[in-house]
Length: 146
Image (cartoon, rainbow, N blue to C red; front, side):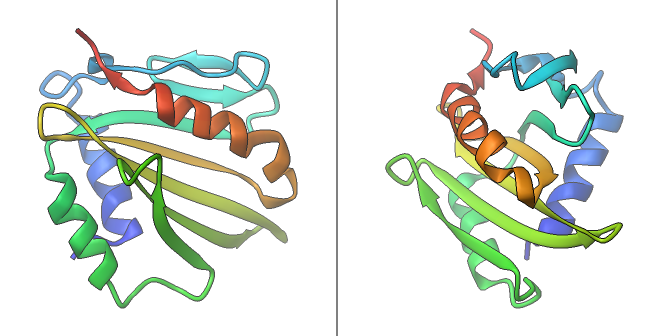
């Protein structure tokens, strides 16, 4: 089964092997007023409180969603569902970090080649209105390089 932790581990491992699976395979448009700096397809807010990472992963969309929906280890502060005509599955989780609530979200987007595009993000929950709509717009724009 694929939990949020397993997804993060898969992302970290993928980032570790960038010569094998390139970050540059994903093209994404982000709001540059909110995510003011980037390294490849990892974007940061000016204060570094919000991060967005986009990565193509060699996983099947339907299998991944099925595993996530069966996962019994998701905590109380987790919401899952679909957006964008069921082409994107999301997992939102709220955690307490340094006495502040943070929202961590994974968006799993079906790609035309059978793989998935994973967009992972985190930001202070108190600033959800600032970040969330821009993140959804970035998710909509994510695609593989042609």
